[in-house]
Image 1 (cartoon, rainbow, N blue to C red):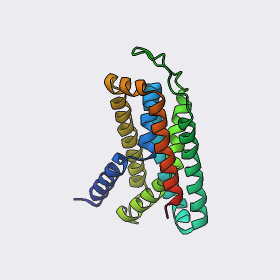
Image 2 (cartoon, rainbow, N blue to C red):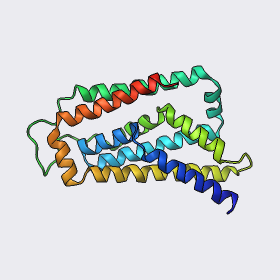
Image 3 (cartoon, rainbow, N blue to C red):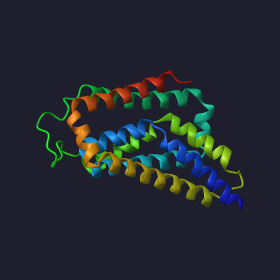
Image 4 (cartoon, rainbow, N blue to C red):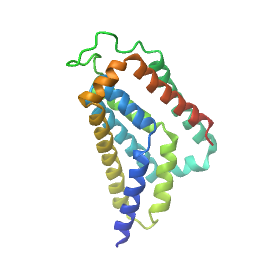
Length: 209
C-alpha cells in the first residue's frame, strides 16, 4: 500500500467514526430537516461541509498550530462556539412550536433562504472547537510532513464532500414521511428536546478541558 493510500484510508476511517457520532452537527441537521423540510436540511449539510473546509484550510496554513499552542486563543474560540450553540438551543427551548394546525401535506414553517441555512450549518461546524482538535490531531498524526500540498488539498475536499453527503443522508432519513410526521406532531416538544440537546452540548463544551 502506497503512502498516499495509507494516509487516505486512515483519514477516511477516522472521519467516518467522527462524523457518525452525535454532536452539534447532527443535532442541527436533524432540527433543520424536520422543521423546514429536506431541502433546508441538505442546504444545512452543505454548510456543515463548508465548515470542514474552513478547519482544513487554517490547519494546512499553520493557524491550527497557533491555536494548539495558544490556550487563550483556543479558549476564546471555545466560548464563542459554545455561545452560538447556547443561543440556538435557548431559542428552540422557548419556541412556540409548530402549532396545532398540523398538515401532512405541507410544510408548516416558511423555510429560510438557502444562504441562511448554509450559514447555519457553516457556523455550527466552524465554531466547534472539538472539530478543530479533531482535524488538527488527524492531520498531525495521519499525514507525513513530506506529503505534497496537493494531497492535503485532496484530503480536505474529500472530508468536506463526505460530510455533506453524510448529513444530506441524515436529512433525507429524518424527512421520511413516517419519521417527520411523527416529529412534527410532537411540535413544541420536539423543538424543546432539540433545544435541550444543544444547550447540554454547549455546557459540556464550556466545561471541557
